[in-house]
Structure formats: structure tokens, C-alpha cells
Length: 138
Image (cartoon, rainbow, N blue to C red; front, side):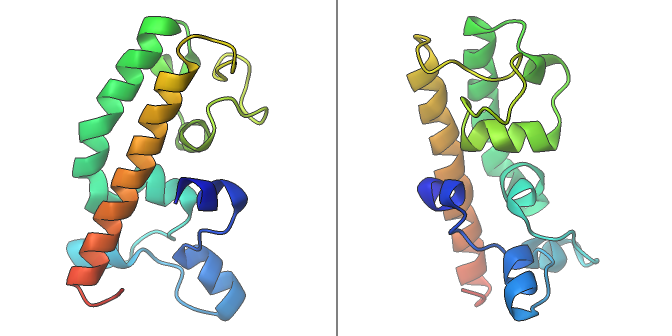
């Protein structure tokens, strides 16, 4: 799923809505919280979905602690935004990130941070798939 997301091949409901005219809203948030849910885009999938927040809260502290150990002045630690956090999780070395967030590929912590980001993506993907399958939506 990580490579698919980076390549733009992972289709979330917002993408399907644009391409096929489907409802763009997060099915899990709609069913779990009985209200109109936000559009399911990459940012929602990776950083905002309340239906998969248990997975998120289990892994993100390790990611932030690893980041803090190597980059204590990284802006994600003091003022994270969902859009920067999403981009960071997808590619922490992305040139789309500001310099005070981006991790140089040559840094000794790059591999461990990248692995944690991938672990988060895979865990979110598995939890989302499990829930959708249990609800008969996958």
C-alpha cells in the first residue's frame, strides 16, 4: 500500500468519487459515528480517520519519539499539520516538505524513521481493510 500511495495508485473514496461519481465520504466514519463523514482522501486515511485512530495512537508515539531523538527541532514535533504529517508519513525526505520537516536520506535515522512510517501505513491499511471487510464493504 505504501508504494501504491506514493505512486498515486491507491484509490480512496475521494479519488473514486472524482473518477466514477461515487460518494467521497469515509465509509467507516459514517458507519461508526452516524453522521456525515469527511471525504476519504489520503490525509484522512493516514492522519484523521477516527475509525482507525487506535492503530494511529499505537504507532505515532514511536515515530515522534524517534524523530525527537534525532531531530529535536523538527517542526512536526511543535506544530504538526495534517497535510505535512501525511506527506512526511508517505515520504519523510520529500522535497515537497519544508526543510525544517524533511529528513535527509543520508542521516543515520532515515532508515528507522522510514520503517516506522511504512509500519504506520501498513497498520492503517490492514485495520481499514479489516473493518471494511467485517462490514461487508470490501
